[in-house]
Length: 410
Image (cartoon, rainbow, N blue to C red; front, top):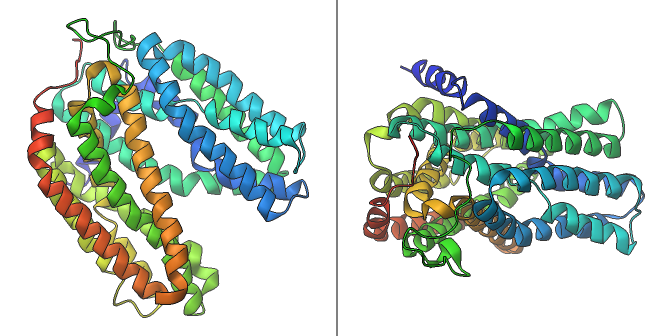
């Protein structure tokens, strides 16, 4: 049975009109998962301190947070091709300027970092909205979003390893420049790939002719409910991001921190492959709360851990539902959001998780000293349970939104 799901992935990703955008989007998304780390390494290599490196990385992240909804709205209104071409050229150019034409402490480096963040190609949101518009059966669309969730786990693990490999052959600056150029090429490839008629068109206006308004997808109650759930469920991820290295350090295994982290991501990927084959058998709005509850239970597994090895096992087992939660979230976004605003809707959903993760990391940093790693694990478990309660409370809202499917031209 476990062999069937990889085969279904392969069948989907090699299909005509699907293979091109799917694989170009993978290339375009590589820089996203190592950008902050690479920027820090570049600034340090240039002689800047950690404070300067953190500032530049933060400005890049702020640029992404502020610019991504605006860029996504441009995609929905004018089509993805011109936006991907523009960002596919501007983003690597800005990063190249940051590496080769600026120095730490200068205003130019800060300004270029913001530009690089704002101009990040919206490959994630574009591809996820395309999955909702491509002529696929519902079961195939479920597999597509499961692939998206699995791909995220692979890139989170693999992209930093790729950066490390590039740095062995050269400097951090050269590595970032190479990755940026590859990502830009991916964005251009995605922009120029032929799609079925009408699939990549702009959103325009509502069928009734009423303007969509300033808030866009944020006007929809089901969308706001889903974003709230995902933001709450991301807080435990941020909390555990701080608690894991603190726990490993407390038990004298600092050198094994990377391995323990890897078990967290590998467990999520294996869970997607092992459990994801039956995802389409239950409606997304019905299975979503149960998956969030399973995620909450998984966050409690590290509580009895007494060694880095035990923690690694607990994380590997407990993370099994994470990719499935993410896949169900994407399926719900594609059904509760206006079909003409899908790119922006997926962008807001991603931002909700980023904000929750950031809040969790900040809270984890403040809590480590007074309550210790186990205390932070307990807080993470409690917040995850609160997210599960919110998901069950919003079942009716999500079911109501799911009654309006995203438009899919035949």
